[in-house]
Length: 183
Image 1 (cartoon, helix red, strand yellow):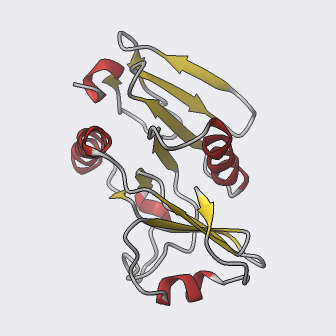
Image 2 (cartoon, rainbow, N blue to C red; image 1 turned 180 degrees about the vertical axis):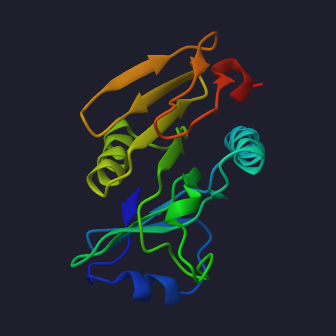
């Protein structure tokens, strides 16, 4: 990723910028652009979001999104858009799904590693979500078919393609085989 502006922006100013060819995030007021994801990345995001959506519909409800923006901090603002996210039903605003960025951190943020991302960039995203109060962050590694689960206590556990992914305190009743995500 590379910085494209030196001016410190707010989340609201980011929202009003003209549409770009790539993806934009705001990190401590600085606009960061990245390459759009590739086909494999998109397929994994669809599979996981579908599994989460089906689980949420039949059990706990809530919001499942793909590429939705979240305001994680203010002054200076940080807006991140995880590849897939989930918000519990009891945390959804009474006004419904916002047209702009979510004014809260998701309960689950998922980052699917793209070939153009560095390990430092992924760690920074994970750290931003955890610092904002996201209780569960998953990083998916398509090349190795692994998922690393991150929690606010610093815990990071790697799951392989034969493992079952579940975290009942955040996603009660949800489970899937890791290999299923990369099919």
